[in-house]
Image (cartoon, rainbow, N blue to C red; front, side):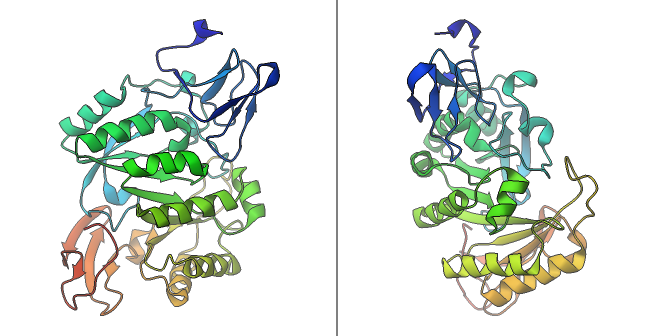
Length: 343
């Protein structure tokens, strides 16, 4: 075994199957990469060394910050809270529009990083006076072992955990994580298989499976949909997605339509038009979704929470900050309607 090339941030990976000729198949995400000796999977974090798979993303986050929980975005999960956020290098998608491509499209060995094993990471979160940890910025699935061990310790210490993800993870690892996961925001690109393949290098159905699994498990869930001109902003696409969400009982799940800005391999596209975001919100509400938001465009005031029954303003947001909160014990203070979320 080529252990000489392994560093202190390497760990034997979970969800692997040893094949013939020194190859290993990874079963962490739906790519199910078959990896030859000395090579990595699509994520750039899981390497075959001597016929065994190792994660190179353990205890070495490349990005750390304390954020408002609204930045994730999570609007129905303890509004106004601060959350300790981290990422390692790597991702199992190849999104043409990636905003964090400098770290998501790199391997852990290519970037400077912190030395923070799970115990120290949780201590750091506590020292920064936060009560939540977010696995975010890149795709947390690719640092699964680090996320899982951290989440277990965080729960022991009374901290909540949040996963901000593309949802491209197999059911078994997701089920293993769920007991230690309090909330998630899943990026649902659209309901078009061809767009998923072209835009992200992935498939749609596994993401839908993850959404259903999280909903059924009781993990608090919110969904983000980035409207990319020419890719995911078509009226038919938006209507199809909203119809699927309603038919699959996501009526109470907050949906965040987010404005696209030119980035990475789509530098020549224009930002999403304001009218299209407003139109998407109207389509979602007509379809039956109760809590629909517009992100990355504060001038349209699309980030406030209203009671779906009496339509009174309950939570007013200015940027990522709460300027008004009229929730009382998870209910509308005007009509006593129960509002889905964790308050």
